[in-house]
Image (cartoon, rainbow, N blue to C red):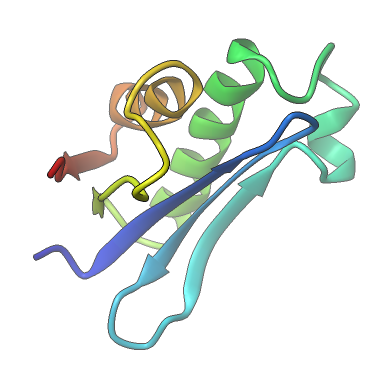
Length: 103
Protein backbone atom coordinates (compact mmCIF):
# COMPACT_ATOMS: atom_id res chain seq x y z
CA UNK A 1 0.00 0.00 0.00
CA UNK A 2 1.11 3.50 -0.81
CA UNK A 3 1.35 5.95 2.11
CA UNK A 4 -0.72 8.61 0.29
CA UNK A 5 -4.26 8.32 -1.05
CA UNK A 6 -5.99 10.38 -3.70
CA UNK A 7 -9.50 11.64 -3.04
CA UNK A 8 -11.50 13.17 -5.90
CA UNK A 9 -14.85 14.90 -5.45
CA UNK A 10 -16.86 16.07 -8.45
CA UNK A 11 -20.19 17.84 -8.25
CA UNK A 12 -22.27 19.69 -10.81
CA UNK A 13 -20.63 22.99 -9.81
CA UNK A 14 -16.98 22.25 -8.94
CA UNK A 15 -14.12 19.73 -8.84
CA UNK A 16 -11.88 19.07 -5.85
CA UNK A 17 -8.99 16.66 -5.28
CA UNK A 18 -6.56 16.05 -2.42
CA UNK A 19 -3.67 13.82 -1.43
CA UNK A 20 -3.90 12.55 2.15
CA UNK A 21 -1.35 10.69 4.25
CA UNK A 22 -2.88 7.33 5.14
CA UNK A 23 -1.55 7.10 8.72
CA UNK A 24 -1.79 10.68 9.98
CA UNK A 25 -4.84 11.68 7.87
CA UNK A 26 -3.04 14.93 7.05
CA UNK A 27 -3.75 16.51 3.67
CA UNK A 28 -0.45 17.26 1.96
CA UNK A 29 -1.81 18.72 -1.29
CA UNK A 30 -5.23 20.13 -2.17
CA UNK A 31 -6.64 21.64 -5.35
CA UNK A 32 -10.17 22.72 -6.21
CA UNK A 33 -11.96 24.85 -8.75
CA UNK A 34 -13.55 26.92 -5.96
CA UNK A 35 -10.27 28.61 -5.01
CA UNK A 36 -9.89 32.18 -6.22
CA UNK A 37 -6.69 31.73 -8.21
CA UNK A 38 -8.02 28.72 -10.16
CA UNK A 39 -11.60 29.73 -10.88
CA UNK A 40 -10.51 33.03 -12.45
CA UNK A 41 -8.55 31.13 -15.11
CA UNK A 42 -11.27 28.62 -16.02
CA UNK A 43 -14.24 29.02 -18.33
CA UNK A 44 -16.25 26.36 -16.48
CA UNK A 45 -15.53 24.92 -13.03
CA UNK A 46 -16.86 21.42 -13.66
CA UNK A 47 -15.94 20.30 -17.19
CA UNK A 48 -13.11 18.09 -18.48
CA UNK A 49 -10.59 20.96 -18.96
CA UNK A 50 -11.23 21.96 -15.33
CA UNK A 51 -10.50 18.38 -14.26
CA UNK A 52 -7.25 18.39 -16.24
CA UNK A 53 -6.26 21.71 -14.64
CA UNK A 54 -6.95 20.34 -11.15
CA UNK A 55 -4.76 17.31 -11.87
CA UNK A 56 -1.92 19.52 -13.07
CA UNK A 57 -2.13 21.90 -10.09
CA UNK A 58 -2.41 19.01 -7.62
CA UNK A 59 0.66 17.34 -9.11
CA UNK A 60 2.67 20.57 -8.77
CA UNK A 61 1.64 20.94 -5.13
CA UNK A 62 2.36 17.26 -4.45
CA UNK A 63 5.87 17.55 -5.87
CA UNK A 64 6.46 20.58 -3.62
CA UNK A 65 5.52 18.36 -0.66
CA UNK A 66 7.84 15.55 -1.94
CA UNK A 67 4.97 13.21 -2.81
CA UNK A 68 5.51 11.22 -5.98
CA UNK A 69 3.28 8.16 -5.52
CA UNK A 70 -0.32 7.71 -4.41
CA UNK A 71 -3.11 5.18 -4.55
CA UNK A 72 -6.66 5.70 -5.70
CA UNK A 73 -9.68 3.55 -4.92
CA UNK A 74 -12.97 4.89 -6.29
CA UNK A 75 -15.93 5.15 -3.96
CA UNK A 76 -18.74 2.63 -4.42
CA UNK A 77 -20.94 5.09 -6.31
CA UNK A 78 -18.12 6.40 -8.53
CA UNK A 79 -17.17 4.87 -11.84
CA UNK A 80 -13.62 5.27 -13.09
CA UNK A 81 -14.50 7.14 -16.25
CA UNK A 82 -15.03 10.65 -17.57
CA UNK A 83 -14.08 13.44 -15.19
CA UNK A 84 -12.55 11.24 -12.50
CA UNK A 85 -10.40 9.51 -15.09
CA UNK A 86 -9.33 12.93 -16.43
CA UNK A 87 -8.10 14.06 -12.99
CA UNK A 88 -6.17 10.83 -12.40
CA UNK A 89 -4.72 10.79 -15.92
CA UNK A 90 -3.61 14.40 -15.55
CA UNK A 91 -1.80 13.51 -12.32
CA UNK A 92 -0.06 10.61 -14.06
CA UNK A 93 0.88 12.76 -17.05
CA UNK A 94 2.40 15.38 -14.75
CA UNK A 95 4.72 13.00 -12.90
CA UNK A 96 2.73 11.50 -10.01
CA UNK A 97 2.62 7.69 -10.01
CA UNK A 98 -0.99 6.77 -9.17
CA UNK A 99 -1.83 3.14 -8.48
CA UNK A 100 -5.51 2.50 -9.21
CA UNK A 101 -7.31 -0.21 -7.25
CA UNK A 102 -10.60 -1.22 -8.88
CA UNK A 103 -12.78 -3.84 -7.20
